[in-house]
Length: 165
Image (cartoon, rainbow, N blue to C red; front, side, top):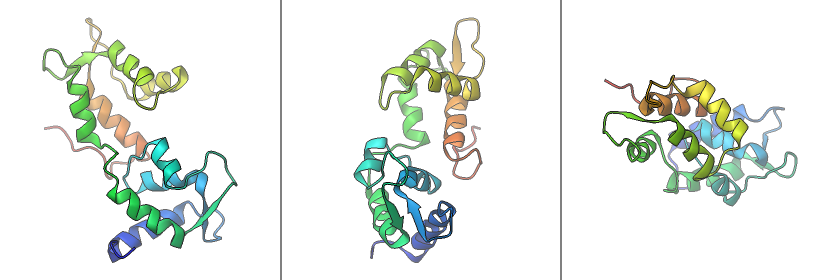
């Protein structure tokens, strides 16, 4: 834990306290991913499990003392991406280098790559984040990604992608 600054510990403790729903000083390991996302991490499901998260509620409770080493490990983990990383990935689908990609290609990507989403989840993402397709079936992908990142962080602007401009 010596590699965490006082500010890191304060931030982690605050995020932890938000998910301490009953004031017991413990957080259900089922919510570990949510606590890490509140700290602006984007852990994969595999990473959450590796760090001690559980798939079912009530299996394991974590104290803040147990959480801080997990937070330190998450800070060191390079296997997570942010807005800029995701933007670079979507640029691969931008054939004309004009900020547009086929909406169908984006939907297919969400269904097929990485941690695959279910049809219902993709429909929700499309409804919430995707702009209307143009006559050629294209959408601007940067605004889509920015909305996705904001939603992943709880809908607020803090820690969201930088404004284009």
